[in-house]
Amino acid sequence: MEERLLEIFKKSSYHQLSSEEKEFISELCANEEDFENVKHLYSGMESLADESFQMNSDTVKNQLDAEFKEVHSADSGFRILKFLFPPIAPIYAKPGMQIAFLLLFIVTIYVAINRMPINDEKAVLYSQNTEQEDLKRSEEKAETRENKTEQNDDKLTEANTLIPELSIPEDLTESAEIISNDFMIAEVDESIEDVLLMDEMVSPEMAPTTAMAIAGVEGEIDNDELFFIEPIGDNLELLDDLFVTF
Amino acid sequence: MRIFQKQVKQLSDEELMKLLSKGNQKAFDEIYHRYSDVLFGYFMKMLARDKEKCEDMVHDLFAKIIRKPDYFNVNRSFRTWVFSVACNMCKNEYKRMSVRKHVSNDFEPTKSLQAESDTLKKVHESTFSESFYKALNALDEKHKNVFALRHFEGLSMKEIAETLEINEGTVKSRLFYATKTLAKELKEFNPIYNQ
Image (cartoon, rainbow over the protein chains, first blue to last red):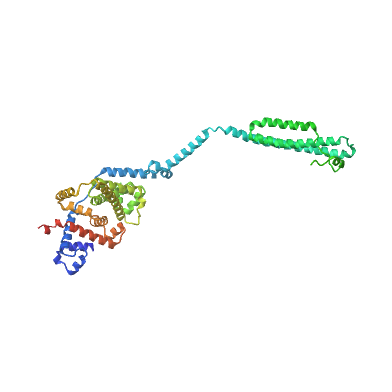
C-alpha cells in the first residue's frame, strides 16, 4: 500500500491521476495543494535518505566491551560467587557484602553483650546459690526429722509394749505438761525455722545466723530426748487432769 | 578465526542474541556492528541531532542488551524489539526535556525577544534538511515515532505495530497525520509556491 502511494507521488501530477488513484490518496491529500506538498516532502526525504549517520566513537565501544567482559567473566567461575558478588550491582547491593555486614553486626553485638559489666551479677548468683543451698538444708533437715520421728516411733512402740508394766508416776501431770510443752516448742521451732529460711532467702547475709539458730534448736531437742507422747487410749487417767481453759 | 567470523555474520539477529546471552563476545560485536549506526541515526533524528546525547543513548541501549539479554524474547523479531526499546528511551528523554523546559520557562526572556530570535533562526534554517528535522521534532511524540520508523528505519506497518504495540490501523492513521502535517509545514520549500 505504502509502495503504491509512493509510486503515485513519484510519477504523476494531480491532474494526471485517475479517479481510482485520487480515491486511494484521498485520505492523505484532499486537493491539489495537499498533493503537491506531500509530493515535495517525499522528494525532499529522498535526498535525506542519502544522509547516513555513523557513530565513530571508539570510547562507547570500549566501554561496552569492558562492561561485557565484566558481566560475562564470572560465567567461567563459580556460580555462587557470581550470585554473591554480581559484577554490575553497586557494592552495597551485593548479597555477599550484605551477608558479611550482617555477620559482622551479629558478632559485634555478641561481643558487646559479653563484655558489658553487670554489677548485680554476683549478687544474683549468690542469692540463687543460697536458695539451692537452703533447699538442700531443708531437705536434709526433713530427712533428719523423719529419721528422728522413725526412731521415736520405734521407741514409742517399745514403750507401748512396756506401758502395762510401767508404774504411773505421781507427778504424771507435770511430766505431761513438760512433754506437751516440748512438743509445742518443737512446733514453734519448726515455724521459726520456716521464718528463718524465708529470711535467708530474702537476705543471704542472715544465712549463718539462721543456721546457728537452727543448730541451737536442734541441740535442745537432742538433749531433751522427750519427743514422745503416750497414747491416751491406753492411759485414760491422763484425761482426768485435763480441763477446759476457755 | 575467519571461519568463525563468517559464521557469525551469517547468523540472524535472534541467533546472535542467544550467543550473546551466553557470553559470546563475537556475537556482541556483530550485533553492535549491525545496529550501532542505525540506532545512532534513529536517535539523531529523534533527538534533534544532539551527538553526545545520542552516543550516550546508544551506549545505554547496548548496556541494557549486555546486562539483561533475557529481556529479549527469542520468538520475537530483534529488530522490532530493539526499536521498541529505543522508542521508549526517546519517550523518557522527551519527558526529561519537557521537565527541564518547564523549569527553564521561569527564566525565559520576554516574548518579543523570543520572536526576534525566532526570525533570526529562520534565516539560518534555510535548508530543507534543518527545517524538516525541526518540523519533525515539533510533531507529537507518537506521530514522530511512527514516521521515523517508517521512513528512516524502513520498518513495515506490521513491524511498527509490533514495535509500538498498537494496531496497524492506528499506525496508518498516525503516519498519514504526520505526513500531512510535515508537508504543510514544509510547503515554503516547494518551488511551485516560491515562483
